[in-house]
Length: 86
Image (cartoon, rainbow, N blue to C red):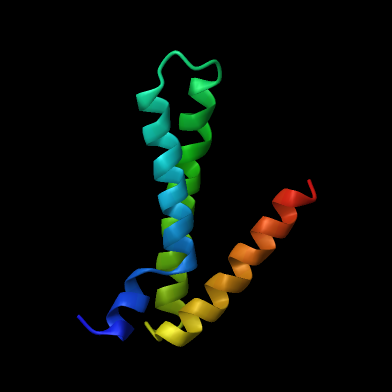
């Protein structure tokens, strides 16, 4: 597996979807936690939305890894900025 294929698989939105998966799995590990339902409620849409956006971006730029990384980095940075200022 060369670096281009690796960077094509691991992109900013895929990493964001992994954060959603970690939220869901953490909800299963610690079932006695107070806000356990919120982890499922926010983890599933985060994971599904990030993977859906990743799929749309890849299709829109015709699987060009460089453009996928540029567009997804801008999108994730904007989401981070909006989350921090809400």
